[in-house]
Image (cartoon, rainbow, N blue to C red; front, side, top):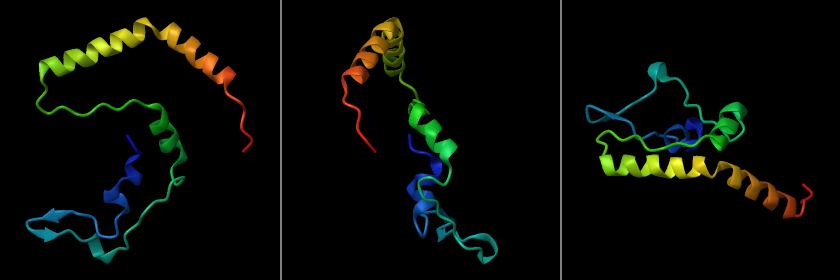
Length: 97
């Protein structure tokens, strides 16, 4: 999931906010702020590491059970996955920046 400040609602010049059929405006005529990548490095670093699942407002038990089974499978094989990642990293040529 991208950091919130990089999503279209925070980037578009005129956000798609409608209240009572009328487009929302900023309070007191304030200028709209937008944010570039790098504006919030801690949030962006966190978003790059975190796993975000969709929010289920009306969850289906079978779907949730599938998530649980998938996480259990990954957890059971965590050592193998770490080993695999280390082997791939060691085999990859180092690229100069």
